[in-house]
Amino acid sequence: MAEQSPAKKVRNQVKGFLCDVSPIKDTYFDAVLQHEGEYSKVVVFRPQDHMHFHKAVKARSLVTLEDVVLQPSKEPSRRMNVFYTHSSKMSCVRDLGEAFNNSLSAGPQTVQLSELLNMDTRPKRVSINAKIIQEVCKGDGFVWDGRYLPKTIYTVADTTDCMSLTVWREHSITVGEWYNITNVSLRDFGGKTSLSTTKDTQIISIPSQGTVAAVQVPTETIKCDIIGTNIKNLFICPYKHKLKNVTLSNPTIYCVSCNTHYKSTAIIMKVSGHLDLKTETGNVVKAKIEDEVIRSVLTVNPSTSRQDMIKSFIALPPMQFTVRENVIVKIEDVPWKTEIKDEHKINIKVEPVEESAKFYSPPDHGFLFSSQIRKRKSTD
Image (tube, rainbow, N blue to C red):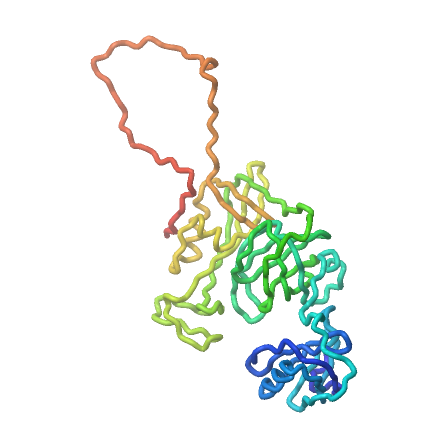
């Protein structure tokens, strides 16, 4: 049976102290209600009451929220969710029999990673204190509102266990440092419990919390020949929305999500795909490759086609690939190997040479030697 909407559920009243009133978010705002030694999230669908909620917080008034919808909270640190709808009312309470507790935190309490790994797999938000052990890989992906945002996957650990953390957007994070990370989403992805930042996540540097296990995602560095590839390109607007039917020769491009026409020069192209790599032992490995690594090898312009990029990859000589969790994180030229023998071990044999009035020297065409990756410009 489908879950009932808040409007159809039994309405109640709840009493307590208000705190942490958020700014108005379009047609609603959030607050926290402290009651009976615990707290609940309040979602207010009456923006006109925003000032009344702020006054109640400032005065530490005891309030009653009447005609509200109550739901059990999925977050372990909250008692319930309170929906304050258009028919709800707020009034002051003269005697509740308790006082506001300043020591009770309204925010999510930190949870150890070992506890998270043993929790049920229903999505929930939590807060952790963890050390950044390793940057696994970088890339881009779609989030719930349809935007295509940069992401970085890290291995994090505390004194009890380790997990994978996906950090969306750009953050100043240093491997080896400890952080307090709040409002991260806990969920099961592909049978593996992992964490992901949300729009409400805050990442704050903290002192070391103790010794953690030195857990690393296995990294493989192999010499391979590229025998197959598939590359796709994606166009996004300045606000990271996906664009369809893009023709860069047009002076403007329309974004449906923004309801705005943008200059074609403001449009961003992101590329990604996979490579089929044949190792020296003959095995074939299929690995993902993201925008940043592709651009480290190929010169990619907004006008570069998929076919051009595919041809350029196939034309590359054998390269050295660094791979983590089936994702290519680095591509380099194959290191040159030079064997130098000891001088006294080198046998030199001198042959007599007939004298000649003519001396022939072959033309010197020169050669290029570089230890840097040779970027290939995409050509037809």
